[in-house]
Image (cartoon, rainbow, N blue to C red; front, side, top):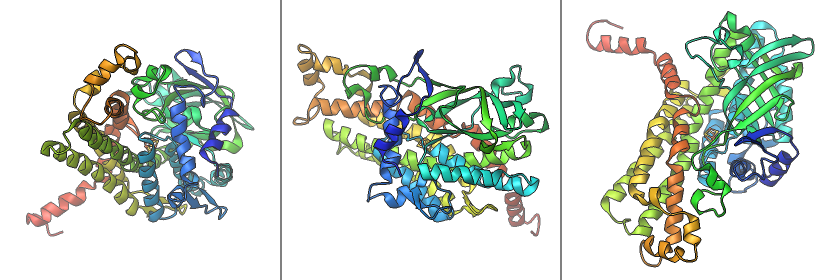
Length: 480
Ligand code: SF4
């Protein structure tokens, strides 16, 4: 298993074609805008080597019997799914942000079962192929971008009916030794600092969409793969001197997302896990999405723990810690965060064994958890801003704080309680500002799929007919 430092070194050996602010990025590890996301992903490697957390950060591979990083492991019990949630909370607490590696983990677990199911019905050989790939990932402890979301163009049209056929990733050529694909994947968390990319279809598909029902894995620096790194709130602050205004200078905000373009990319046959089996696309989407929605009550709860702590510190620094309304608001933040955690633990414990032998979370509970995130993280952020006060939106910059003439004046008038340096108050305010604004909130809304996607799955799983029968029986309208 790699350490965080070895992970960084391994990224330096890759030759990805990455662009940011209209310029080619030489090294994702050393670029100031990308470095925090690399650090955050590196935490997933360090966690596995920390004696305090190795039980969460590692697992015994069912393939080799060796200990592997849990992010490369296939869940074989409800307890392993619970450990995943606890691992994500621990990482959220350490980084205060997204550490990105879960998308690849969830892609591995979804493909493990779906390749098995396709083979069972079609006599294809995808599962054995996938297992070889999984061994390679586990042995080399690689980080994977699990790439599902297509740009989608006109949302009212299916993939095959788009004016531009490339708005969904699709096969443009079939060869004896593989396929050539064209299209893109949007919002790809951690893509620029992953070793591998696993592409999956983004939605259930019909017979007309067979060329879009494609799943495969590629090294992230495969020729033809182009990455355009997305902007985030306050991102140019990373290009300035100093670290105060960043709030979380070491690990950044959210995951670092990219538009990944597949510009006629060749995929060798050994790396193809679905190729035209359109009737399995929906099942792959549902499994990947449910695993990823399970995560959100883990990672977001860990991040919320940091935010609660920041509010406690802010209240201390400005003399409001004993105010009953502040204590009430902090209680509410904790309540909301723990409710999210309950959902993730519950969907793990209510998991079921699939035909392939791995465990799948309860999709109703997993989707409910993620839908709660789209509300609760906003409310937690609102309460944090309320407790902190308006200075999180108006504080002068670090450059003003360091200025020989106005710096001492800024510090004098940013002072809270006596004895706490003004810079401490400013730093905690910047942390709250960056954790509760712009990109951080939009990610809570749309990461792991937009709320409507969760509503669709909740309604599908809700078994309304059963509930109807319960009511009819109690109302004396029907016996059963
Ligand atoms: Fe993992 Fe997604 Fe949470 Fe990021 S937002 S830490 S990728 S589950």
